[in-house]
Amino acid sequence: MKNSDFRVDSLGGITTLTLMVALGQMSVGLFVPSLPSLVAYFDTDMGTVQLTLTVYFAAFALFQLFIGPLSDRAGRRPVLLSGLLVYAAGAIACALASSIWALIAARLLLAIGACAGQAISRAVVRDKTEGAESARILSYIGMAMALSPALTPTVGGQLHAHFGWQANFVLMAAIALGLALYCLVRLPETIREKRPDATDFGAMLRNYRSLVTDRRFSGYALLIGAIFGALFAYQTGSPYLLMVELGFSPQSYGLLILFNVAGFLSGNLITNRFGRKVGIYGMVRAGAILAFISGITMVVPAQLGHVSALTIIGPSMILLFAMGLALPSAMAGAMQHFPHMAGSSSALLGFTQMGTGALGSLVISSLQNQHPHVMPDVFAVSGLLALVALALVPRPEGIGK
Image (cartoon, rainbow, N blue to C red):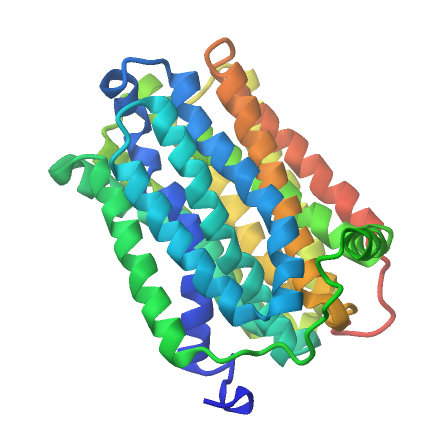
C-alpha cells in the first residue's frame, strides 16, 4: 500500500488510529474496578495499589518524550509495531504478577508500549491533514481518549466478577497482538521526510524549547493537561469514594461510569457539528469554561460535607462534556504550526497530558487515606488551570484558526 493510498478520514483509517489511542487508555479503564480487591489479594494497602496507576501515568508521560522524536527519525510504522509488542509483553507480565511490586513493575512496561500508539496516532493525523480538518479527525480519535476509560470499567468490572482481575490483562494482550498484526499488513509509513537528527539530545532540547516558548502550543497543552489531571484523579479516586465509601460493587461502578459517556458524546457531537464554524479557539474556550464549572460543582458539595454518587458523577459528566468540546481542537491548535516536527509536538502534548494525569493520580494515592475527599479539590484546581491556559492562547483574528 502506498503512502498516498492511506486516508485518515476513511473508516479504516479512523478505526486504526482510534484503536492505537484506545489501547493505552483501556490499560486504565479495564483495571480500575479491580483496585479495591487487590488490597486483600496482595495483602497491602490502597495507597500502594493506587501506585499501579500513578507509575503507569508517569512512565507513559516520560517515554513519550523519546517515542515522538524516534518516530520522526525512524518513521511512524516501526516505532508503532515495536510499541504494540512491548505492550503485549507488559500485559502478560501483569497477568502473571505474584506481588504488588511485580504488578507495578509490569505496569511500567505496559506504559512504555502504550505511549507509542497515542503519540504516533496524532503524528499520523498531522502528517496527512491540517487545521480544522485535523480537529475533525482528532475529534473521532478523541472518543477513544475519553470513551475508553469511560466504557472499559464496565467491561473490566464484568471480567473481574466472572474470571478474576487477571482476565483484563489477557484481553489487553490479545487486542495489542491483533492490532499489531493488522498494522503490519495495512498501515503504511506516513511521515513525509525522516529527520536523522531528531533523536539527537541537543536537537530534542531545541525542538521542545521552541514548542514550550510558543504561547499557542503551551496554552493548548496546558488546557489538555488540566482536563486530564482531573480525569485521572477521578479514575484514581472514584473507586475508593464509590466502592469503599458509598458501597457500590465493581459491576455497579462500571455501570455508573456509563453516565460519563453521555457527557463526552454530547461534547464530541457538538465538535463534529459546529467545530469548523466556531473554530479551534471558540471550541477550546467553551471547554475551558465548562472544566472550571465542573471543578466548582464537585468541590462545593464536598466542602459542605455532602458526598454522593450524584455529586461525583454529575461534575465528572460536565468534565467529559468539556473534554469532548476542547480536546480535539486543542490538539489540532497545538500541532498545526509545527508540521516539521509532528512527532515531537505530539510527544510533548502526550507528556503534558499524562504528566498532569500522573500528578493528579499521585495526589490522590498519597493523600486519600488521610483526606478521603481530596479528589474534589483536584477538580477545582484543574478547573482554574483550564482558565489560565485559555488566557495564554492568543485570540485569533479569523474563524477556524
